Image 1 (cartoon, rainbow, N blue to C red):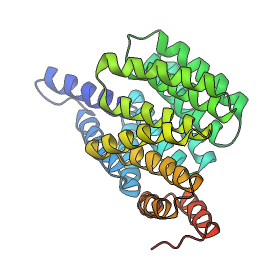
Image 2: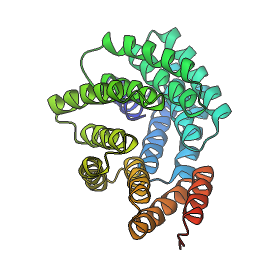
Image 3: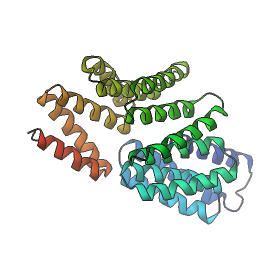
Length: 286
């Protein structure tokens, strides 16, 4: 999602700076960029309904002027929100249209990012074969680009697919490769994402003591970055870790914070699952 927003903003700035007067459509294109920019920041804050509205309005403007790259970016962003809310069919509709446009445009970065989101939608539904195939195609696109965050993102998703198959060694290898790329770029958010995934892998293996520092470091960094998506992932893993250790107080504290974030982001399905889990463990929540 981040790349789409930055790319669209950069494109608008280049066109604005090169023209002495606005050409037809440039005003709408600039307005679409501003809307997408606002939507991106709402997304990071966890205010998904507001973000969704901004992305949808940007999409309408880009369709009016047939700005294909902008349309693809807006569709990808809307697909990412639908994915987070568990609206699989809606997410696939947005993402498949974005993918068609990116293929027509010959944009390997756009193709890679959209494939990653589409693969994540398949993975969330348990469609492991389709997810694996989609992530492998995304990796091929990433490898055609200069080293950057998309390669690390794709490796992470391949790790997620391996983790879902309980192939822990392979998952650890993918996450570790992505972590090395983060270190070489000094990417703070990337490092936090990969630490959370490594902690999650250790948690799945029952290595609770080793998992804890990875998850604590990730949570601290996500909070510094004000990245609600990362905070949600870290709190989810920490809640599960506390439950596995029989730490009811820790599970309650982490779970309450996580529940508030789910509710703020409109992730109703995840909120209901968490509430049911806490009740089943005899944990009251506010």
